[in-house]
Image (cartoon, rainbow, N blue to C red; front, side):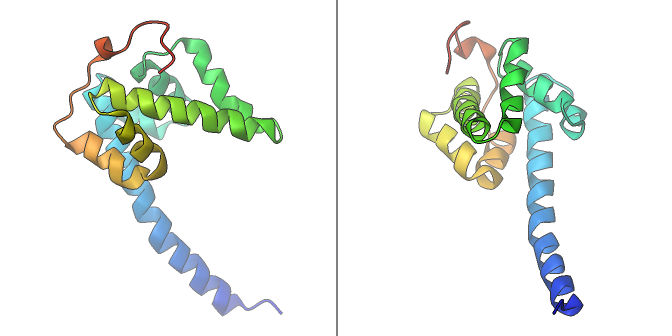
Length: 134
């Protein structure tokens, strides 16, 4: 019943698609962190990269906890989705982009993160007001 050749072919095809996308997102995130004045290598360290991302977004430290609501069944997924939407809009705003660019960051990350990273957009944390949600 289990066809190892089929499994190997599917696994190879999956890796040929996922690995390049993953590499593109890592390199783009590294550059975004660097543009924001943070060390780019922090993108490679799990959990710490979330902390640095919240610093890039000029969020309070407790904001990190919102990303961990994903472990709560059902409701957690919606909470993380909500936080991701808000943070995508805020990242676009910090780089001087329109809110529609935030939608692109959320839905087509593999395209919009490199545009943000390697384009002419400049990071400016004064574009957001303290206490502002987005």
